[in-house]
Image (cartoon, rainbow, N blue to C red; front, side, top):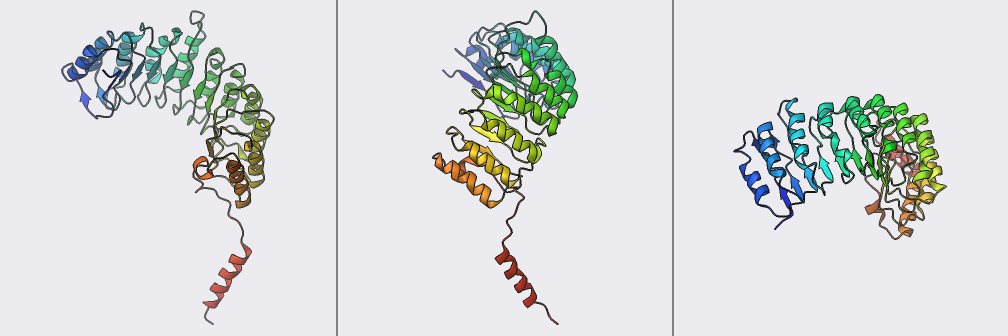
Length: 359
C-alpha cells in the first residue's frame, strides 16, 4: 500500500465531520502511512478535529503537508485547527516536517505549532506566506531561547513573504545562532532593511551546516553587504545555494561579494542568484573568473543587470569549459538592461531615416 495519502488541490470545502469521512477512513485503514497531504482545500475546525483524531493512529507519520488549508475560514479558527493537528502528531517518533505555508497562521498559529521545536527529530518547519510578522518571529525566538528547549534538531526554517521588515530581521538575529543544525534558511520577500540583514548575518557565523540561504527581495545595501561578506568565509565548505536576487546590492556590493567568494573554495556551490542588483560588465568578468572551477554549478541567475555581450560571453565560455550547456545553467536574461552600441548598425539606421525625409 502507498505510504502517502493525498487530497492535494481538490479545491473542496470541508465543513463537517461527515464531509471528511473519506479522508478519515483512508487514514484509519492505511498501513505505514508516512506522508499526509491535505492542502489545496479548505477545512473547518470541526473537519480538522475529525482528521486529527485519525492522525493519532499514524505511528509512522513523518510529514504533514497543510499548505493552503484555510481559505475563507475565520482568522481565529486557524490557530485552533493547527493546534489540533500538532497535538495529534507531536508524540510520533519519526515526525520531522510540517508545511503550513500559504495560510493565515499569524503569531497565534505560530504559537500553536512551536512546541514541535522541542523534539530533536523535528527537522523542517515551513511558514512561508503565513502573515506571522515580527510578533510571530518573536514567538519562535522565545521558544528557541527557552532553557527548556535544548538540542533543537531543526534543519530547515522557511519564513519567506511574512512582512517581517527590519524589526522581524532583528528578532531573527536573536534566534538563528541557536539553531546549530540549520542547513536551510529562507527569508525571501520580507522587505527587511539593512539593520535587519546585519542581525541575521551576524547571528549565523557559528552555524557549520548551512547549505541553502535564500535572501531574495530584501535590502542589503552597503551595511548589509559588509555583514554578508563577513559571513561568507564560514560557509565555504558547505554552501550549495545562495539567492541574493533583488537585494539592492548595487554594483559595488556585487564586487565585494564576488571578491570574497573568490577567496575561498565554495566547491559545493550549485545555485547562485545575483539578479536585479545593477551588476555591471566588469563585475560580470570577475564572476566569470570565480565560476571557472565550480564544477557543481547548475544554475546562475543574472537577469536584470547591466551586463554587455562580451562579459556575458565570458561567463558562457567558463560554463562551457565546465562541460555544461549555458542555456541550461543561465536563467532568463530578458531584463538585462545593457545594450551594446553597434556603430555600423546605428549609421545604417540614420541613413535609412534621412532617405525618408522629404524637403
